[in-house]
Length: 391
Image 1 (cartoon, rainbow, N blue to C red):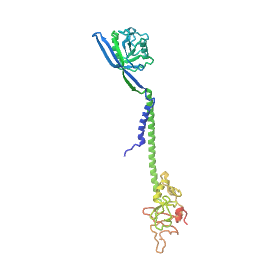
Image 2: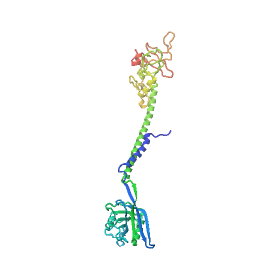
Image 3: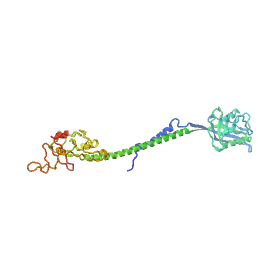
Image 4: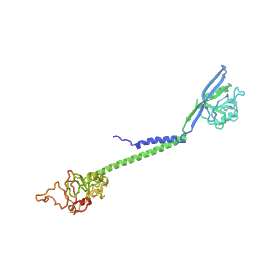
């Protein structure tokens, strides 16, 4: 038969998962929800070689965190090549806007060199209606979130590096490019902050340490309990052997020394009946065997006088070792005990057989039960009840 885990041992994993869920859902465990909007970027210009209008539209931009989510349009302007500042960070940066007269214009600058806020403020001072930043080359077609608080109500978006370079090359070649910016799709992305990750990791480690300590404690207690059970079973086995040495007797009709109508067992409070098997304790109190044996296994004492029956027989079961009973003084047993015979035969003159000791007047004689020890009994009914000496 294999071992079966107890419910306490199975429950720790569920408790661990529940605790982890509470940690993740606790206030502060989650980072803030990231909400951002994509931007629809539309460009239009005249191809000088074919004299055809080239028009393109794609949802390739991303609005800045502090930018108003609204439409904007105008001719694209870039920092003048003579300024050698494609990032547009210098406060006196001038912009080249081909074909512009009085129409609104949109500033196109590269990412890097300074903060997003600085770039936006430089373009805003030049009356740009919107600012478009294109990402660095190493990021490819990706865009990134932008934090530029304090720039007012100017529209700010970011486009990918290829898209930005394409428009930049057209403008630097003197081709007017009209750009229209529209609001695209709303995106919501939840993420866990680094501090929350550290907090969850520490909480999980502590939880695992506590669970491991609890498991170790549980199995130590189980081991100790199993050992005590083995010791208790061995102790009860030895006690049962000692109890088996107590005399037994079967109640008969007109039993001398026992008033069948008046005597009762102190354990079950029922009168003794004919053919009842009784157990005689060293204190001379008598009980039903089926009543007193379980009592002695648990208590070891007489229910009436509290005599320690095991010690009275000369045993010390605490050490699980038997010690020989003390030898009685010469004549002490002979004065109070008699040996019971299988049948109380007398010789032809009515006197007891010469092979046995004579029985004094008033002493009760019990027969030996089949398969049981020889029963010894004090004289007189009063000796059964009070353990007094023979009269």
